[in-house]
Length: 443
Image (cartoon, rainbow, N blue to C red; front, side, top):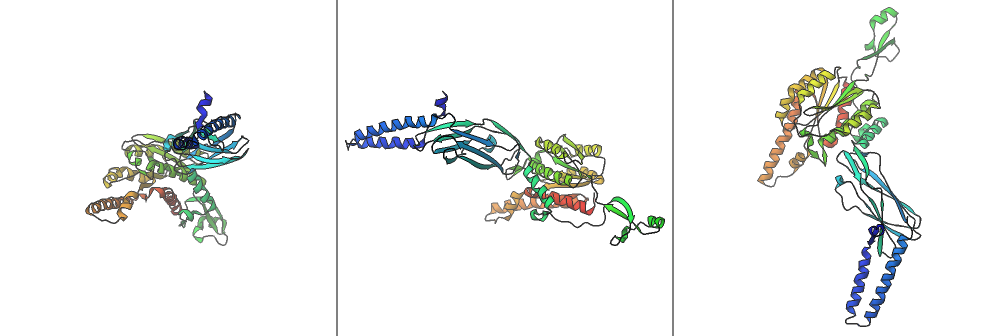
């Protein structure tokens, strides 16, 4: 039974059959071809049996292995490597079909190559998931055939191999590397000049040439009978929270990725940068209820906790309760903190309904409201109008675009920091805003 399941007819074999059928048809007009056609039939039958013998004489003719990472990175190209080796004593033609997870909706994956005796090859391809969760790879099918190309033998490896898709680890590592290399401008990250002193006092020390004379401590100078100055250090271990709205407004997709996943990827990359800069990081996810609350902690291992919580976040088709969020922030976040609120407003009336809660949070904390430009509207606005219907569409699109800018102005008028960004530039703009706030000593 196993033999029958693994035996397949090669496509070339049908060409052989077509030639034989042609010979038999022509023999009606050329009788001398009739015995030759029967000879060719016997030869093909013998080769068919010989090809079966060649492929099945070795029980382990081909070995193959799919090498998956422990975690796939959402919205990024992830490399999958397949290595295979031939144990046949002849040149083997290999056709590889990998059964990709159903989330990719790809049913035509195929790769062909030729393996010499005992040779090993590697084949690499990339996948780009756009949803978090468990992805199950099916059979790794390897079809082997000889140079006769009459039959194929199927080998099956690594059935039902599962790998989880996490928030963009690749993006996080990318910005981590840029921060270490101090080459932030390459990806649009700004260097911001620090204004004045930070508020964290370190010690009083003797004045030396080059110290800022504005830091002279006159009381200490009088006591010590020599110039003494206050020494300050950069403020560290400040609490920073990423607050993610998981309501229906974050369900909108751009380039195949939901706004929620853009926010999740940005939260992971930003949290890593903030932890490396010795700040405390935490996160909140909310919609109708408070779904996740992770207190701000200054430990690099805390990033794993944030990663696991981000992995399990899902969207809901409900309106988010900003009043509940304000109550949670007031009760759980007692120290002045930087709050990065990832949400989206499509109409100014939606913003005005939530404005009292946003203003209340901004009185005690530094609140940054992050919402998104509709890039599809921008492309519509930039197109030339050729008929009346297109003019209507452009006018409506420009109205929505103007409302976004008016919402940004309205928030700034009430002293609330804002980021209005394209989804693909979210992480860069968020880190820029964080660096700006730290440099200006607003926290």
